Length: 622
Image (cartoon, rainbow, N blue to C red; front, side):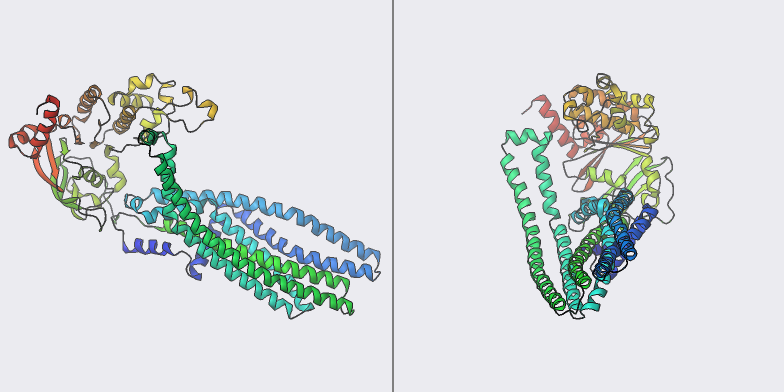
């Protein structure tokens, strides 16, 4: 569903991150604040060490000049020794400081990256609804934000510190060049400015390119996963579609490579042209210095300073431009991180939400309309129904009738476009969302398979009690999976994954087990019934992957579990829902029939037609 205007503006800003100087500066301040919060002493050490490191090349050149001039001028040995000792100290600092800076910046990157990752996934986890995760634009930015929060803070900080270090060096050598030749220094600085402008332009193009190829890379990952997972292997081989999927994967990679190549070619052309300019300036400066020495207008030490200044100024200006550009690129990517973390709730939150009370009256849908976006058709078109507390209701209908959508609305993953849903007469939009969901337990049709132990797969239904083995076993018994679990190598502590071990260990069942589809479904059911005393139990196709005997056992166990609780059951197998107190038939986005099994059969409407169709298939009638 569409978000608020503020959320739309936040996402719009994320489409063109860093488009103004103010935006970039804001992002830089955010990175610095993040680094200072995560690793204050290491950040301060990085700044100090970088300043000293920037001074060292200039100090080395001037000390070398003084030493050579004094050697040529036969100065006292004591002054020569002092200069030599100073050069030795500077040389030692030259060796030590880079390693110290590398260590400190790595520490800052680790700590800042950890804090950034925590904030990112907290922000994503705090999104109460599902609409963001169905928005491709949001998913592309989330992917870039995931990359940015890992190394982005470190890259920005590295670029800032490197830029500061290079700037100190450039200023020092620029002063030396101005004192020796006032004309050449501005030309060198101009070439550096041109390099900087080009690097910033390339950074913006590269970041825009990364956002543009995001959908291509996601499609490539989709096809590569299909080609490398056991779930798809059977059909790929049976229908011989491996070549088709491989070609589609490679096509997406070719498109992404083409976009990257265009940026790389522009970078190559720009750097080549500026390199020729820099080489011409260096050659002119060297000829001028040789002429000055030939005419006796410059000392040997002056020549050393001049040649060193030209080389260091050009290389440092290039390094400065590259560091600023990399920082800009990291800042642009970090803007996606800031956009994601600043994105507001995808569902409106009441100013003073009420806690969800135990269900005593019932749940009511009043003229509920819903569609997934303004571009989609209405899925629900004015649904009216009531689920009395303590009763069981079944939803039946053809695929696409809106049964699972109604469940999503009831769990408040979305809000109705029109109408309202009442919990004991209170609009669920006015109820505290966490307390509402604590009173609901659900088995979704697309249940999860967690690469965790059996006990953890069940205990995730109520993490406050997931370490209670008695409750875990009871839930497994209700779901009819307890006997299968006891036959596993480590029982409830058996890991249900083959992902986390060395290749040599994967041959042993001791190191992970893969369950069948029906066993996974029973675990999902156990996870739902593990929640203690829910007011509402929602079972969306809880037995779709089970055989007839297992389905019978499960529904018999679930009848006992649902007794006295409000329950909503969805199933295409109408024999499994016939004992519900009320059966509602959805069609065309509306509730067209409602009543008990006997009442609906007697009415000879849509329910009777569907029931008789299924019964006919079992009886073998024509």
